[in-house]
Structure formats: structure tokens, C-alpha cells
Length: 333
Ligand SMILES: [Zn+2]
Image (cartoon, rainbow, N blue to C red; front, side):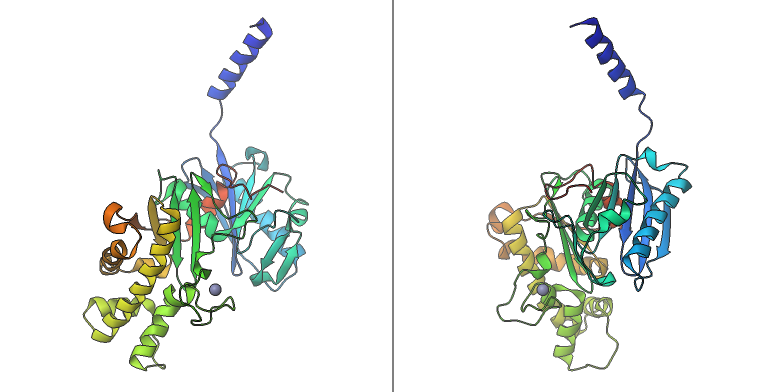
């Protein structure tokens, strides 16, 4: 080894040791709010800025505000934008890796939008943009219920049915970033029409909306203000109609989950969204139904089912860590 190379090695090992605390910058952009946050390396949120999205406005103004919120979050943490090696953004959409355009964001009525060029007017960092459900699974894996696991499935069961998949530590979203939409896999041939326009999707049978529909069909009550939580509570209390509806609903959910398990065999399945807030009664029902309905479930078992821990913060924390665990479809702009 030359003395120059030795000096370089020494310099590198010293600079590694003296590295300042690393921080991560993430944003969560939805139709109602834009949130930006700085997280430390353990996924703890150090600062956060939330502003109204103002979704009726043009792309120029919205992207300017997204940038401003990230700079404000950095400022509140006492950091300049040069403290970060990249910026991650979660959106209800994804970037087409071929065109580098945002495919569609229905909340803003954007179609094939050149979001990167707008954001780059204000922020020169490499920018990762990922679907918000994929950010949520990364957040749970980084700092929540799936910490320590490399193969994770997150199902977000609320008004809709979202999903995020991590395989061998990386987000999986298919070759073009449009994959991992488990809510739109088909559960019933020619079944109920889904919000996506197709028929028989898992979302139409396993979402909170679906549970409410199933309860209404059972009772014939289309008038009362029923919530998924209300149905779960009534079922747990022994109400026969609610119990029957939840039994049917968990049949569909277990059936959908068994398919996902058969394809992915994750180490853990995290349930998020409103339905995940149900009591142990609901979890016991799912855990009891799954092994018998899953390929080799009786012999080798099924993954552990856990409740998500981070709630709405999962997306923003995951966004902040996009550059660390990126999937192959995720190329920074
Ligand atoms: Zn669908």
C-alpha cells in the first residue's frame, strides 16, 4: 500500500467515525394536507409541518408549497437542506419509470404530470416519489410493528383496501411501480363493482365500506348511520346480525389474505387503517380462519398478524427512508 493510499484510508475511517447525526426528510402529500417531517435514524420525528393541500389550485402552487413545507420542517429542526442526502415524498400515485412522470393523482386531477421539474425549481436534492401505501409499509418496517423483519405485508383496511409489500428489505412494486395493489386483486368472479371500475376486487369485499354494505344487506337497514367499528363492537357484544356480518366479512378477508400469503409468504402481516383498530375478537377470528384456508397453512403455519403501530405517521416516516431501502422501480428525480 502506498503512503497516499494509507493516508486516504485513515482519513476515511476518521471521517466515518466523526460523521454527524444523520437526519432524513420526508413528505406525505394527500388531497387534504401536505405534511413534511424530519426524522432521526431511528425513525423518530424531530420536526413536522402540516399545511392544507389546497387541492383546487394549480400544480405550480401545490408543488411550491410541498417544497416550502419541507424547507420549513428542516428549519424547525435547525437544519439546512444540505443536511440531507435526498428527499422522499409519498403520494397517492407513482412515477412511471419510463417517462419519469407522475402517473395520476386523482386528488389534484394530475395526469402524467412532470412533478420533478416543478419540485426541482426549489429543491436541488435527489427526490424519491413513491406510492403512499408503499411508504407506509416502509415506515412500519423502519420504526413500527414490522421492525426487524425483511419480508412484510401491510394491509391498510379503511374506506379502501391499501397494501404495501417489502421483499428482502426492499419495497416491491413490480417492474413499473404499479404493482402491489392487492386491494384490486380479484376475490369474486363477476362480483360487486369496485371503486376502480372492475368487478369483484378484494377491496369490494374486505374494506370497511364492504363490511358496512354486508351488514346493511343482512339487516335490510339502509338508513341508520352504521360504522365498521360500530358493527365490530356489536358483534363482540353478541349481537347476532352483527356477528353474522363480521363472520362473513372475515371469511372474505381470510380468503384474500390466504392468497397473499400463498404468493408472498411474508414473515409478518401488519394490519392498518380503521378496521385494524378492532379488538382482539376480530384478530382471533382471522387467526383462527387463516391456517385452514391457506396452502400448507395447517402444516407450516401462517405469518404472524400484528396491528400497525404508527398510524398516520407510517407514510411520512417511510417517505423519509425511501432512499435507504428503495425498490428497483424507484429512481430519484
Ligand atoms: Zn378494484
